[in-house]
Length: 355
Image (cartoon, rainbow, N blue to C red; front, side, top):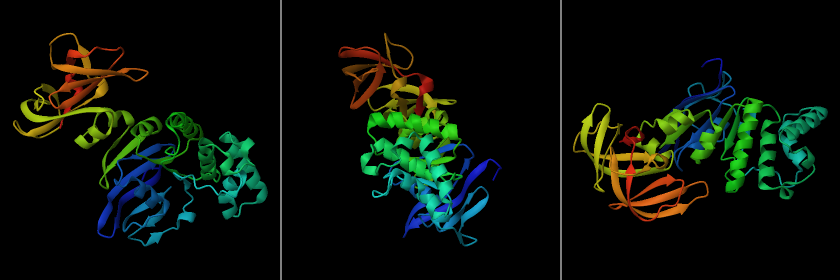
């Protein structure tokens, strides 16, 4: 563990009966860093967060906060959740309905027997930081979803925890409010230099808010890195498929030249791309290309194919084109409406991954 590491998880394992949920997971969170745990349902991301919080019982491994062991299976250390001094923000917000905003935020300080004068000062400071001071005497049912979310964050921050844990913090908001809230939350984290571990299933949310992303798959970390690394340099098919909006086509390896391979697709198209598989010529493989990397072209050329444009859909900031290629539906984005008919599509070699 380095001086900059605020949270260290080493070889954490957890099972429900004979069903392993976390399989020797190790990760670190540095001071002032935001790390998102991303993955599909059942991947173990929420279980990992809850194990750090003390709300789940692992059977092996260790968890340290600022060098202090809060869980260590080998040493029989298991600090109760309420004594781990972690800030928790739940998906449901978990506000007391019969308490005012002030009393909800004050609750962690009351539990810690903080002096009343200090409680008043610290609660008002937390509410002011989050733009809630004028709502101190309201009750949760008198607040919007976004305001309730801010109250739950104020409650998590009021005692200055070393790490804040957020479990799907934006999932209860509508789509428009989520975009606004993630910008506001990222700005708050940066301004207050918080160390945050965030669970989300939304890749856009993870990329927008995080310094690093840990993508979990079946209880293990499939890949971790910065948002740009995770999006632009996937190491496995699972990562490439999970991140971004993709065209995925199946076929067989037709040729191999160094770091590139040609895949002969079931839809009759052959394309070259970056080789991410050890599969030999003739073996099955998949081609993955992000939708935004597919381009309309004027004529035949390198890594181009003629396909049937079925329709153009207006999405506000762009058009999405849908093409028929054999039994596959391919998608691309553009700036104007295009009529149905034959079109040339270009698949840039360095944007195609062959798995």
